Length: 337
Image (cartoon, rainbow, N blue to C red; front, top):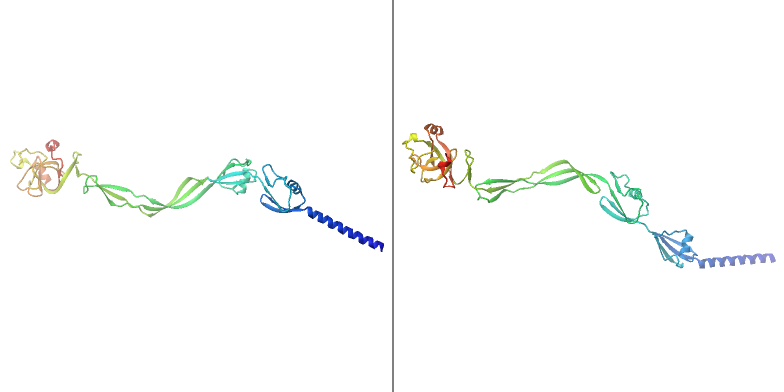
């Protein structure tokens, strides 16, 4: 009986001792939440301070890492501890577009690989791939891209100016409105670093033709004398039946109805249509002076003076345009010499 009592007593004492030990440990243990660079973990610890907890968990702080609360803070139950790991900031420019981010990568080449750019066409990287990452570093990356683009482009219309005597000199009038056309252009564009460096036209399809704009411009009524090259301004135009005469077919004196002697340039007219003394230009004959009359010259008829009858026969009877010149003071005889 004595041995059984001793064994029972020993068991009771061991149970009481274990219970006390567990209770004591639980009273010393605290639950904390650790957020390390965004990663959240809960721990049960008997550490007295934040620094002691880091040693228990074998967590190391680097020079610019920040921890809240500080390492000398006393651990309390249900405490939240936050570690913000410092990382260098990088300004990363890809084909003209810049983004800013923090990174734990070590070299420029590591970033190129992380962004899957190592196989990009005609890759250009500044600084070099071996360059170590430092805070606020600028990294520039350029790649080459070839695009096929189809564009609709306008076809500009041409402006054509035409002269007319139906408008006042200097007056303009649009006879036909201009209209742009339309073409479809297939382009091959070479883009490097976000900038267009080459453009090649591969195909052009005209979808709509352009329509020229026609502008009529009023000018002076001018007639050009092909024999002299002179231009003469005129005020009136007649379509006349022209014949020819010479002194040998008349009285031989060569005196006109206006009293002057005949010369090549003198013409006979009907004074009721063209007054005597009027300066004219006769198509195919030249500058002329209405200085003579004739019995058969009535209405829209004109008789042109030539030196010989042979010339008169050669001329015969023709339709001619007769212009009344603006300059009525010119010396026709001097011009026709």
